[in-house]
Image 1: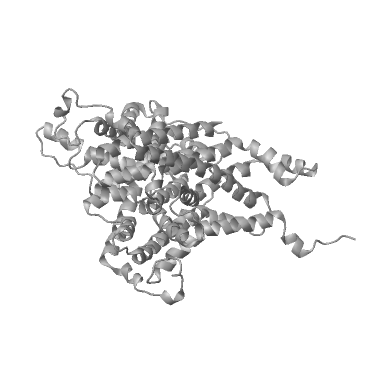
Image 2: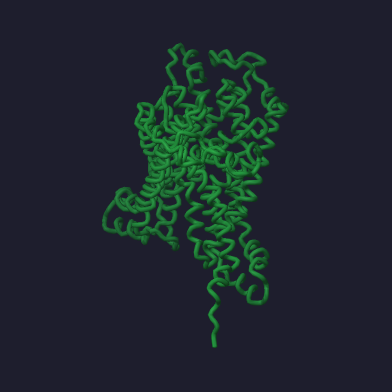
Length: 567
């Protein structure tokens, strides 16, 4: 007689219990912060111990949604996100086509040019452009040398859109380039056989088949732009342009704080981003990818003929504008002895440049502390985040736990929550929870893991889905415990992929500025916060020196990440 397991005993399996524990952790990391932002939006008090009561319900904050400031910020955010996404689309698709499907000269360089702006964090790029093309920047100094009237001003709405468009274009480039490299070219070949020129076939067939990748990457660029805070604060605000993230930050920073109004506006921002994410998923889910495959068909390269050199020059111009000029301007400002530059010719005097500011960075105790904090936080986020994301992915894709799908939903939720909103919610969450982590490095680690969960989860999930579980199951059948089999067999076999996830989380946490803005204290300042403070206080030269060091660190981590991906 076969005995059916007792329902209660069956529901208390280790995987079920572990799943419930992980879901509880995800609710604390993601659910509580979002719930507290909603609570703050519909009450007249801020979330604090003892304030969480339905007696405080109020609709006063919701009236701020209809104010002229909110309407103006929402309009600016929408216009900037739309136009910058179109600029990213133009740059990203153009470079992807050149690198993947043409015989342009030095194709590897064109590929590097398409990817390179990603190595520079957006707020460092904004800092670089402010010293390059601000009213007192290098471009206007050069105009004075030439006897022309200075007119360049990056602190404007077009300047804001330009920086967003250029530094979000690598996301479009990567997605379209990957799709082009994997595409089966049978339909394109058929069009050529039937008499269509190859350029026409690419325009009417290839780009049509690339619609999912093009639309998906454009929506991604739109999402990143509409929730962007650093570039808006560095470039748009000095020009008198408010966006939804800068308005939220302004309300939170003023005295007395208008946290309830900020929370109400944050809800609008979350809904806008969530709508775009859902639209993106809906569109991609209904598309047929049958013509895009990884089977061995080598794409024919389009001959550019006499346009090979001009195409290369266009890629070089993009590389010059997006990487070379900003980095050079940072180095010039960081090494020039005076904080003010009237003319370029005046900089040629002997002794005008020195490395004192760079050496001073390492001699400053507060900056050394910030470097140490950044490294400590990033390493802890990478180690703990990789382990936690691996656990989430394993429970989702390797177990039959009933709640496993909820783990995936919760882990991916931060994609639809702008960083500035999540940072605000995390601040209130850890003021209320009875754990003494507020004001410590631990809070920053927790906050970064929460905000980077989607990236870590996707990275570890991809490796688990590619790995067959036969070896692990065989070990269990021969008497090893499941935990021992995972630790001694699965994890070592996935070490390269997990190491790539580790480096990704390390690099992203080093770049982060928005989330820790509400959470840091004097003792827990990070390198990104030091740059932000220096810029806000008008110390451009110091901010530039730290920005150069910061970019080199990010670039080195990006190179390591690429090398690991190739293994």
